[in-house]
Image (cartoon, rainbow, N blue to C red):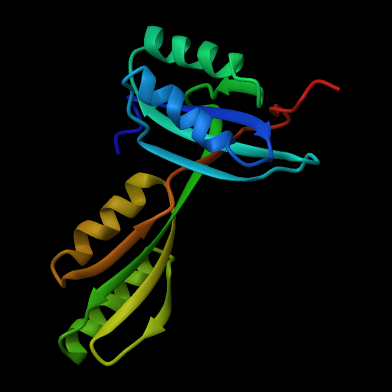
Length: 170
């Protein structure tokens, strides 16, 4: 995922059934693809935070933000300012391990990338890696030489840097 073109939108929504459907339906109606979406409860009672990553020009993103803000269950929506946020993604990677030499090489890569092995089998290792999408992509490119058996990525989650926060005005 190329972060230079990717826009990250942070959305506070009511924590109730059907909200994710309404948000994703808005993107479907506008024929706009969501690159990734993460959703979880926030620090505020009865609210969830969605982090949505999309590729698009400023005009399109501006329209999406305005349309999101009009949804009933959306409490607040903001595009995170490029370079003024922190982001992370988690990936679980199950890698083929045909021999002890490959196992040793993979373990060395895991250490270099500051990730960790969370499951060991005779013919595979499962690795947990957290970081920027570029870091995860670099790790995956190395693991392709051994054979990736399975992969699960969470998508980006992000917060504004410093004391700036996206909260409901109280």
